[in-house]
Length: 254
Image (cartoon, rainbow, N blue to C red):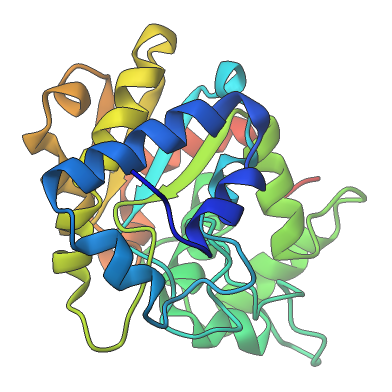
């Protein structure tokens, strides 16, 4: 097959250990639906700036966890090609007196709940009272650490250092296409990636229904995993499996 631009150039920006695998995944997508990739290349989609395979900056042999979300953020400034890493978010914390989380974090429901989960996991916040003054006090306690993570980039770096591949079930977002439809089209690609990871036996963390639907693939079923609600659900704050997973990683510290 001939892979159209801008998809081919996006492959070249991934870590070299992934190039052959990504190309094979695209070939498998093309075999399953020959019309999909040419139509995608001619369409407008997120992420932009050639970041379609940005998640694959993590070298293959260093992957210990695969965090799978549903799809890119539906805003150009937010969609980075890396699961859950909102490009519109810089500082994590509010600079206002008595503030807690920054305005961009508060606007991003999933990220806000993820931050609260981390604060609960670190024993700084009670999940039953995770708003208002209690949240502000917890944020202040977190920020007293000399090595406190100040930006979302710090958390991304920490996840990367812990061996995370931050992937979405669908690598693209298009305003006129249902996310579940794009995710289905990317399933042969995802299957190829999981087969390549099989020898490393990473733990999968599947967030939300679209990610959990990947269990239809034998390559996904064969890997150890945790299936959780998507962080846009407030119940995510109290998810004990997520707390236990992330607590040892101390993501709120650089």
